[in-house]
Image 1: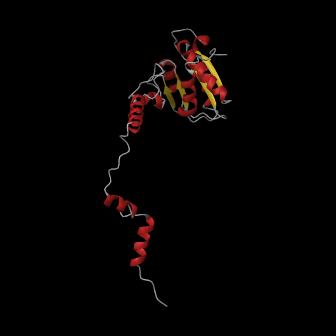
Image 2 (image 1 turned 120 degrees about the vertical axis):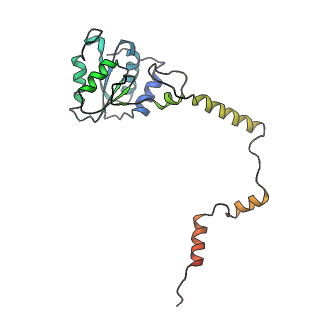
Image 3 (image 1 turned 60 degrees about the vertical axis):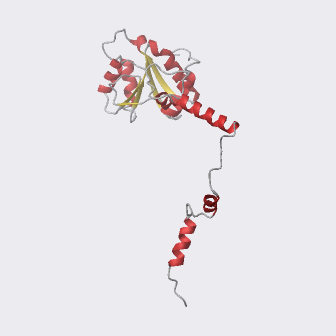
Length: 206
């Protein structure tokens, strides 16, 4: 295997990235470019792609060039032949800034980066990471802009507690309000509106 065995801790996030964020389809072709520090991440993504029977090509930078790197190695440029094959965009994930910059500068189609520095044409992050919904693991290149996971858990607990204590639901409608709702006078239905229009219409008598 190019990247070695996947990490059990990273596999859930990798599957979410492949299935939800990137929405990879079985007939897609994927190029994985990674370095030694991101090797486990790439291996986990590769495992997620294998699960979908998606064809992919992987390159470990240290296996094809020395570090620090002075230019993009030939295998990376070969992987970018996907552009000539008709790809409309390429996602670069968890690779050094210098590699992403070199790749982006040689392409006519846009590159979308996720953990690939600021030189890509666009950026993407998994929504779970952006919103802070998954606190078990977050990639080192991700940024959580909120902690909605904690908010959701707290709201669910408060709701369940109110139900158990009999605090919710409560009847807050007066008899008149209840009558209005039952008679559909608060929010008229489409049928009510149509009936009112018919009452005002002039129908010819034969």
